[in-house]
Length: 420
Image (cartoon, rainbow, N blue to C red; front, side, top):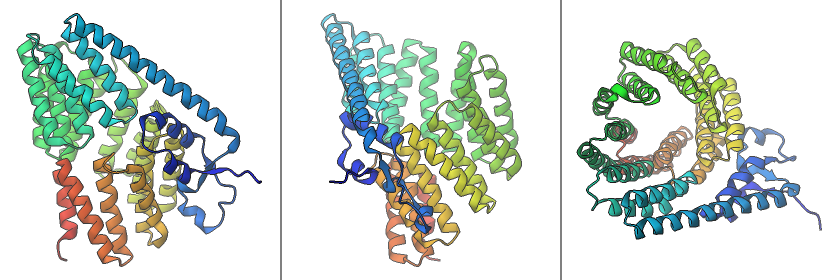
């Protein structure tokens, strides 16, 4: 019997969304190749569904993934052993830290549902202690998880409680982190004035905070100012971040800084400067995921200029880095961009990109991104005269945005549903 390479689309359906299979899914994405028969006009609309896994890679990938899972299980059991000893000794602070470490390990594999019980228990363990510092940590970590899940309202509530616990403990750095978390959630919701206030409150406490923390806050304030069309203020905060980060230059921070500068130039319509900044961000980007996101920005820049071929080239380069990272989220972002390129070119075959992006998002794995894909898919469907499909997609987008508390995006979806 002839042995054939394995289609990725089928493999991803077989490998369900279980934590034990995450390393294998990531490895398969990274090792996938284009099918040799992928030729002709259909190639332009190719997604991972048309890629294959070479048979000669299967055994090694399964063994590597198995070793990775065993390491994770060993870490889990070691953490549980430490947790039980801490509880037996009455050391609530150590018990909380072990629970947070277990939750972080689950979140690293995007297993949000598995992380949640650890974080809820961490809050419960920390609550009776007179030392409010463990409680501040537990609440903050729990809030960050809820933010990742798109539960903005509960996340804000937990960040506020974390702030109160940090203030009671006199823990300045924990207060800074809680204010920053509040600012991040309000930014996510498009409530820029509130986000700015929280970031400024955090910065006011940074008299002796590490340079990295101060630089990140300045960068965040620049983003808020940019979103409010306050160009001078946005430039000011970027320069502040640059001066601070010069104290400890690192590829991560330099990439973030250049990407933020590129986004500011893009918002101001300064295409040449934006392109230069994005390429600098790409040079410093430390991971394949980061490179994919910068290339996606370059694709958006080319798209705004009507340079469709350049936009597609940048998006396909982003796809390669997203595959190397084994990141479903990055791939969904890339296919969203390719779908938008298809819509603006009047290419009716571009629906495949939106369908693939939605499959990668799963059911509320990335709720804000999923909503954005539905919104763009609705615009695509409208462009090919599928009015009912467009209405359903945009309504789904609006519902997801509303559930996330993403006010600005929800309003955009509502505007698209309003009668012409």
